[in-house]
Image (cartoon, rainbow, N blue to C red; front, side):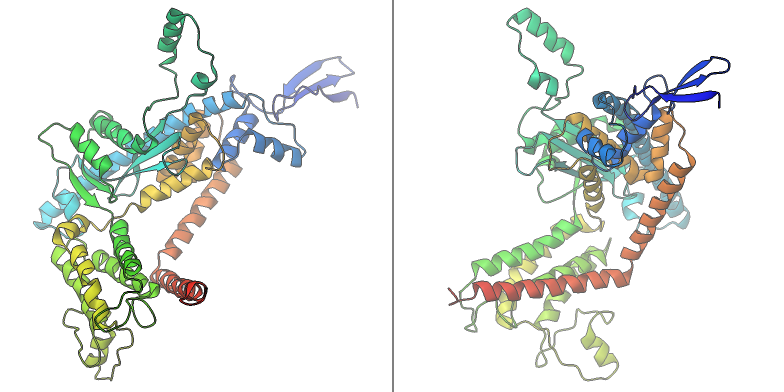
Length: 511
């Protein structure tokens, strides 16, 4: 009854200053509702980090606090961001260094196993046939805006053997300080300011936005030996080889080290669909040797193109490390679609997937219902010939894709939405946090909090671990054979529906 608690209404962000007064002994105790590390209050820092994790800035945080009937967030959001980025960058770089070390250790283990067995397995040939410090990496870039107008871009290098990010570079051609500052009339004063500002300037790139990826790749390739003691000798990229060409010309490891270009299986698979769709558009309305058009019912529909693209991808993925096997499987797809009841051509097919061979093995009748006419197959044969070229398929024997890069990039833009303007600091926070979580899971954020000077807390550990466990369970479920087949069936159905709707809307003679 002798103690009274007063709120001094002197908030520092969501942290309140409290005054505890004793009427009996007349003592006055002042305290805050959050711990401090002498730089920032824990509650303010946690709120800032949490909002950045879900892609919300100060204005969104202000609305959140209003709806929750909380004090408004700290007006020093920029200071909190700068404090956060330092800890995130250190932990992210440590995670990427660990990822690079993991690849080297894996290669050493595989080399020892191969030496002991005195053989080389197809699955690990890429690891076993090169020095331990020569790595195969997947390289890709992403931009905050489409086209060549983006102020910010991010490039990532991912090990194709472990699927983890081992280097990351944010490129920016915008600095808020340079943009908002009024240029001094005094040339000497202006020159002095430019020299002093150069070290802290957020702008690290000049040129077109499209060249950001190439510039970032050159920078990361040239620092790989200094950072991790490794060389990136195999470059997995998409069909656009401008970045690869730029890296090769810069000779990051000297003129004697040759870099090998690998192709993303996903991009190569899409070439089949893209080329057939283009061919279908070019042949629209033209008669083939049988007097009919290329498209239409029972011919090269979008659904059939999608199926052929899937089969082409499977031919590559199921023959990893086997170039001849890939070529065999690609042409097996062609002759399988060409086969009819009168002229079956299943010599290249495999009984594991060919229903005709299964029926023949079981001595059951079989009717070809998914064949394409000979005239259609003759037109698309050059496409198969081009995409079955051994020089092209040789670059796909690794069986890897750029999906890890794209997944990491997706995490970045979830934390930094493309719909609103962001400074390079915000893009870096999003990139470092995305790479850290991508490599080590959400639980790795505990290390960031500890580096900021705060203990993780029981609920933080529990919730972050639960999120990771749920994500792993969902990932395992989506990667199951049944789920993959279900997704493919749904894709085929959507293609068929889209084509039917397109025919209804744009059919000949309707307008």
